[in-house]
Image: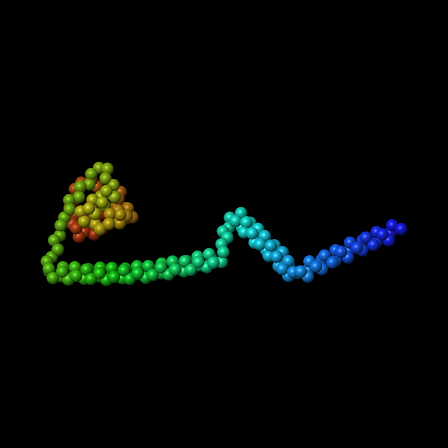
Length: 184
């Protein structure tokens, strides 16, 4: 006797559940599915952003990315413009230097005076190194570059043969001639 009552009750519950489901689905079925999908997508995007930030990455929107790309292109263009301007200025500087050197050459030719040869009295004292001597000669305008002259002395073995004393050295003497003078 109890069996038909339980079956009737179960059937009633099942039918009422189906009615509720049908009303729910028919009232706005696409809206409910879209809401659920959008809510899940929002949660997924937020989780992904949080994960990336936690891993040390930067997360930016497409509009921010586009702005950064435009700014980068603008800066690259400015750099290119500056490089072009720099090369033009270098060309102008070279032209000015060429003009001034040609003017100096013309002036020296127009003077037609023989250059005066001068001598320098080099005093080599105890404790002086080859670089000290080279610097003294550079200061006296006998050599153009003290380091280069010192390297010549060392490379050719003259730096160990330098003798103490006073030496007269002409301003047009070559490195070899100067080395011979101070080592004899």
